[in-house]
Image (cartoon, rainbow, N blue to C red; front, side, top):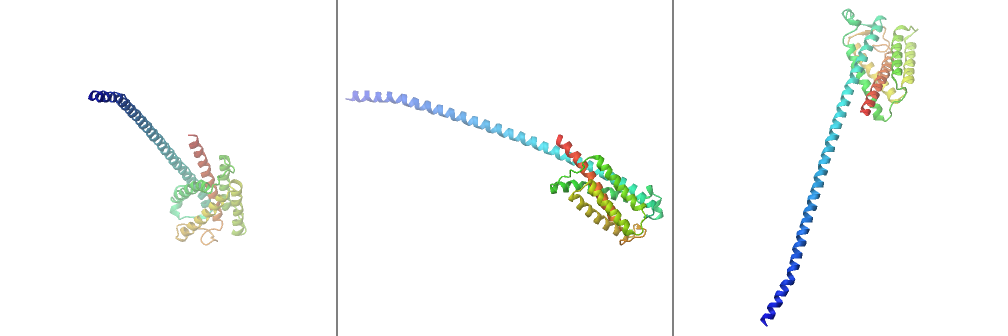
Length: 267
């Protein structure tokens, strides 16, 4: 009896051994698959993280390059506009002094180009501010200026502006009202011929108002004076000159911005 029980136990043990071996083998295979899956997932995650870091680095470097290029072009445009403002101030003020429209003290008349030293830097700074502001306002309003966008038109606009300023010193009318109305019509004609934008008209009006107020304060404090003032302390046609000057400098700034923008786009 005992022998029979022992033989049946051995048979049960023999039958369970393959099951245990198969179970151990399946667990080892599953652990290997899991380890391979985990290692593969970690490898993919590490590669994805590495690619993201590379992409982030490239984008940050590109943004830094574009930002630095934009800053460089902005400084160049400002310097060009400043130079244009200085040259125009020297030339146009010389015309005014020669016609005795503007009077300076005798010691000032002995200086270079018969002009006060502070006028060209102030006009250059104003030209840089106005010229850089025009394209910014265009982008803010979403109305890019596309009317006569070429340097030939800009040069003609400068010539017309110089002609308007020269007319203010050369033309003789019966009274200042007729002269002011004539120069106002010429200034509006300059805007209509070379600009025709709402932003240009608005900035021209703002420039004329602000510049006229500053000039009134300067004349009131005795810095210089105008002969035969008829608009408080200055001449009534002075806002027309400032308006046409703002439109002219604005067109120069727009043309410079368009050239720098195309170059950045191509790069």
